[in-house]
Length: 94
Image (tube, rainbow, N blue to C red):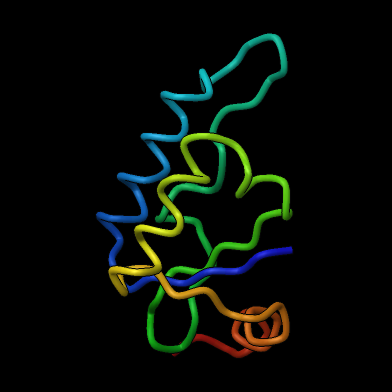
């Protein structure tokens, strides 16, 4: 499992829409609507940052495998541990 967080809702949505387009979502055959939850329903930590947890394989598929290192290097997306992710989603939001 790989876990991430970002403070930018627009970046989160841009990435989600890019991956959806690349992977052909929505897909009526598999009934997959989107690659991950839209920002308006995605989990957030107490600081309001969006949280995302994906399986390890997710990050190996193009274009995610190209985008992730760039986003992490830029500081726009932070990779966090599964324990940090779990603790963040278990905290009551303000």
